[in-house]
Amino acid sequence: DLLILDDFQPQRGNHAAGQIIAALRQARPSLTHVRIYFDPWQPECWNDIETGADLLDGIWSLVVTPVWDRPALAGKTLFLPFPHGGTYPEPPSLTPRFRFGGGVQYTNWDRALWAAAITRAGLPQRIEASQHQEDNRDPLESYRAYMLRAQTGEANLNFARRSNGTRTLTGRTFETLATGGLLVQERSDDIDFFFVAGRHYLRFETLTDLFDIAALLHQEPARAEAIRREGAAFFAERYSDAKLIAYLDQFLFHRESAARAAA
Image (tube, rainbow, N blue to C red):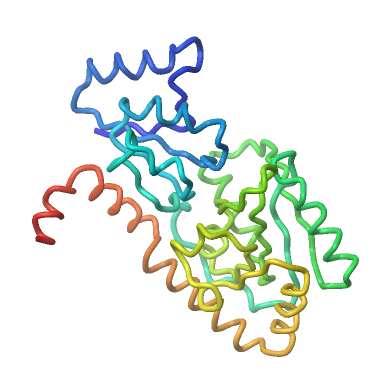
């Protein structure tokens, strides 16, 4: 009933990718096609996204960017995080230390500058950078192991800036809350679509902000713990895997009935 495509670019392979999906739609007209976009922050990809829109029934992304305002994509976009492999146990008690568990690549090189500045400033920090290496596990088992490694009780740092200056969400924004952790997130307007700063997570823009957050972790641990718990509870209520599947089902197959009920 449903085909979910990752990184569908209709012009890839001398337009072969688009031709394959067009032929599949003709052969299986009842099959619903959805495209997942993890990184639509890159303007150089926007024309390709728009070109493939007529081959898709839905577009699923957690990143809110201007491309979704294009007429060809109207009514096809769904803004939600992606499933996170079920539920996770309660994390350890909060430790007043930052943890950075992301990767450093050419698209986000300033993360290395942040890490160096935090260390030089003497703020407590532990770096456990992602390597994206094969671990020979089943994909879901591997993902759950990755998620569980982040359950250290430390305050999870997440950076937003990309190489072109765009500030955008990453999967780690949601992964931290999915595993019950305390999210310390660099400012990104996208996140306001999902969560409230100071209530569900702690926001920073400057090194001074991180000094203030470090002081909060040391001096007001009960307040930090309350934010962690509220963020985790809000995530579980709104964005659990079961909820996400229900949202997707409603969006793709029951929008007309929902509109009639609302009327």
